[in-house]
Amino acid sequence: MTKSLRAALLEAQKAALSDYVVEWAGGPVKSIKKGFKAAAVAAGLLDVSPHVLRHTAAVHMAEAGVSMEEIAQFLGHSDSRVTASVYARYRPEHLRKAASALEFD
Image (tube, rainbow, N blue to C red; front, side):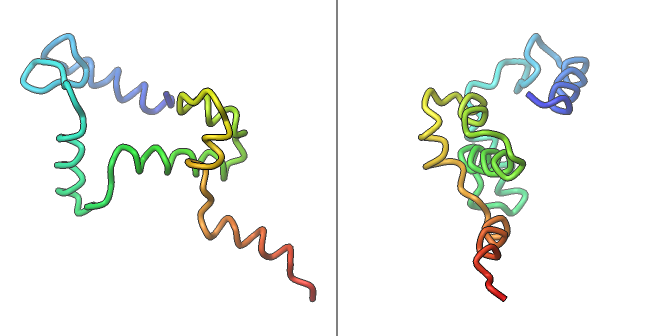
């Protein structure tokens, strides 16, 4: 959990109407899928899902130099090879740096 997320959750807890920080009508949210989809549609983001956010997080961590082992642990994988092959895809901007190493002026 990031520092900013923790701070936001602690702030939300102060305003909570129940024992649940993430709540709906005073009860726990049983599934985020429906609410997430509604929020994404309202924002005009039709192809966004929690799974897409997972991929995005892995890419940002990899581009920041976080090791595959650390990313795997963050995502809950027991094998970092899964992380490397499925989640840690690099953006084209990142790969341009690799391609530039093949320039022979």
